Length: 289
Image 1 (cartoon, rainbow, N blue to C red):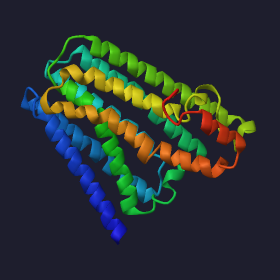
Image 2: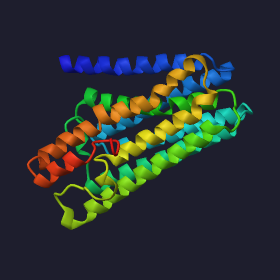
Image 3: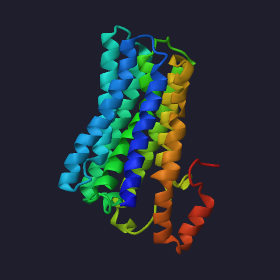
Image 4: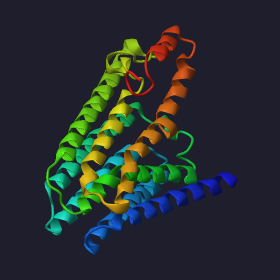
């Protein structure tokens, strides 16, 4: 009972933080129509999570979790761009921001969905998909992930148009670099795992030789690029949106990514001398650091 109450409190806290951040980043928008975009996006994000969560809980499946995350990204971006176009203020910065997020979301969500379908399950959900509040918390956190990652982009798109500048060019370049790093890392690991000779082994070749989690490095870099592109369109409290890449870094390194994978790897190969040496010579996150 105590655990259930704690999870309900956590879900409520996430929703309240989302509402507070949404309110802060829409205060300085140029019109009520633009301000309403942020609120509608917030509703859309969590409504999608709720609907698919209820279906998934009824079916006791996690197969659509990652796919729903991608669909949510795509939905909020398409909606925001559409609304900006209706206002007659669609500009190149908005198009670039929307396009980059759409490309990333389509690629990653389909990759993760197909991986889960091939494996048959996502072991992260083995113990939680049969528990209503635990499973609901996972879906709520996914909504918060979408909200936080897209916060700079949605705020910038809903704001006054700005001309092309170095922030747009530099941010897009950093996004491209991060995206390429993520794709290369995912591709190399998939090929490694598909080779029967590598069953039970850890990957230490290719880009994985300079970082133990290069896919996550790429993700942090590309969301930082999105935030950089958004900077010229922000003002006042909207600058709060720039916590987005920091949130992404902390999420991936402290909550649901690196820490869990490191613990799992240590359990599997903690006594393997090759793995011990790999850990000693290979940075856990940023290469050469």
